[in-house]
Image (cartoon, rainbow, N blue to C red; front, side, top):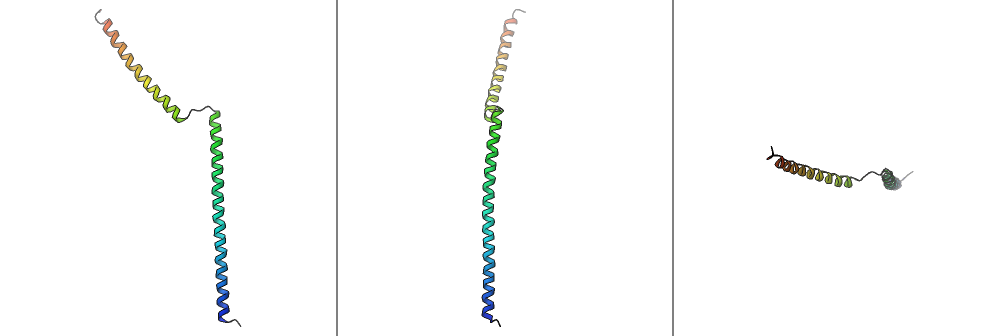
Length: 99
């Protein structure tokens, strides 16, 4: 028959073995999650590189360049409006006294 000491030892080894299995499984899952994260980053970087190459082949302007040209166009339009007003004022002075 089994003595109480042997049953306790078997139970302790079984619990320790089970905990060890769970620890190993948790470590394996952590490693797998880390590997998946690494693969995700690599795929993301490859996608961005391919997208950049594709956009560069389309000769698409960057947002910063677009905004700079837009600001220049707004400034030029404002200057043209101011010059147009000055020309109209000068023309009014020239034609005003003759009438």
